[in-house]
Length: 135
Image (cartoon, rainbow, N blue to C red; front, top):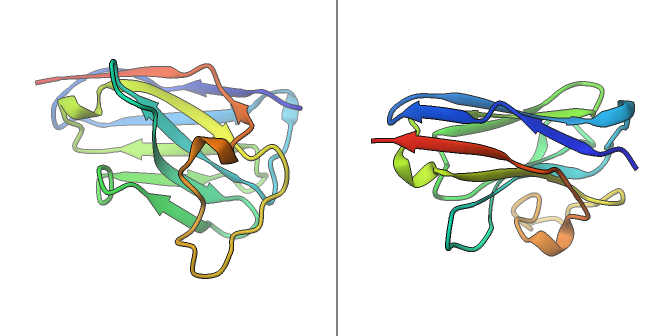
């Protein structure tokens, strides 16, 4: 199974932007799966924030309320990478950001609201990239 490697984290001031990348190493493909991003701030539970299903042209997109309208998830055509464009960052966005993918092909149920945002659905994880937003 290919690993997931995140990059793009860093330190920015409030109002700034960052773009996170998640690449499947060794050329692995994650077709027909949900892939996306969790984040975990110190002392808080891990939160699912943005996901996309790689089986179609950007289907199954889910955003947490905390990032809706500010973050945009996208994928590349060969299903090996997903990206998270983060705009209008604020100190509450400070966290370790983790990329995750379904271990096996995943079918989104109708009317389910898109990819799930719960950790138990994701069996492949990256090591994380730190995002720090200063006020």
